Image 1 (cartoon, helix red, strand yellow):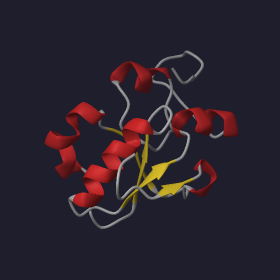
Image 2: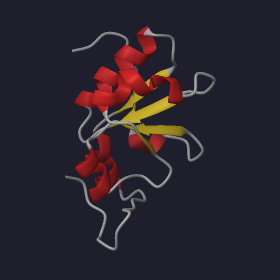
Image 3: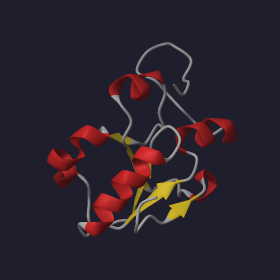
Image 4: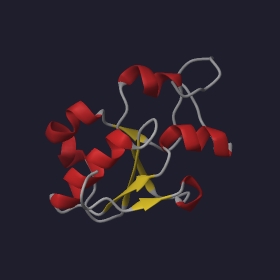
Length: 109
């Protein structure tokens, strides 16, 4: 689909890894990984400078398509990024921690 898109399973993301969530605001608000940094895909071009270049960046979206686009773009621009296979859907199914900024139960939409 896209060139230059290495991929890992959700269980391979290190606890101290830099996790970038590229989903939309409503998806993020419904539930996200506790340590994730949120930059929606549509803002990635203007906010790329916020992403560190000295560490591997793990990129996630809902199912893996948008994050694959982000990984291809960032890797082609000099970052070291990896797509998370299955996205937040796989994250949730695996039972990994999720949170929201409200009192609602975290979920993936």
